[in-house]
Length: 217
Image (cartoon, rainbow, N blue to C red; front, top):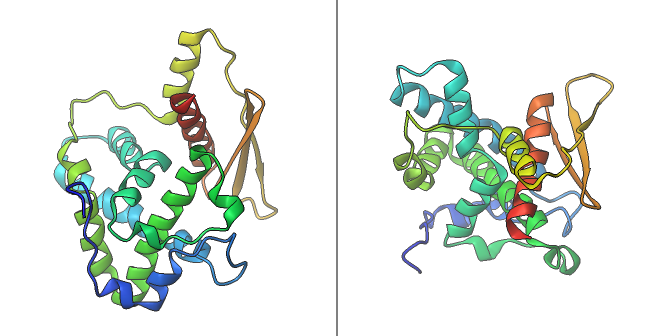
């Protein structure tokens, strides 16, 4: 194990749902990690929100939201997943495995959220909370209440303006019930897509994917 690896409780590896958390939808259309990812996303948000609320007692809601977004986004979640000592358990199809890193980051982030969801179902909230606090320990230690935090859309706008490039147009379509949103952006000949139960968050997720593309190009 490298010095940067995050050790996972060996008990987790014996849990059926924890094993399923590493199964991408390209491997199985029904026994995959998507439902666990959905649940883990919610658990992660409440744990990080509680941590920030208790630690930064003088920050307002806007600043706390920005700080949470700096922690809970595709890139940071992907980085944490890649530090897990069990990351090699991830199962994807050969075709999916050949995707560029931009798409893989989304897969890694989803797998991490699925792991959290699996621990929550199998062992309860307190165990999943302990896992989250453990794997984000380094990220938490780097937080600064006085840091200038900007969301992904703002950072993308600044990056593109610096290059003199045209700003992206976010196309958002909701489902019939109006409680889930799909956002699509075409940028530099590529299409970026993300979904969320909150319209603004779907846009933020797409902006994060484009930022990753810019960093790797």
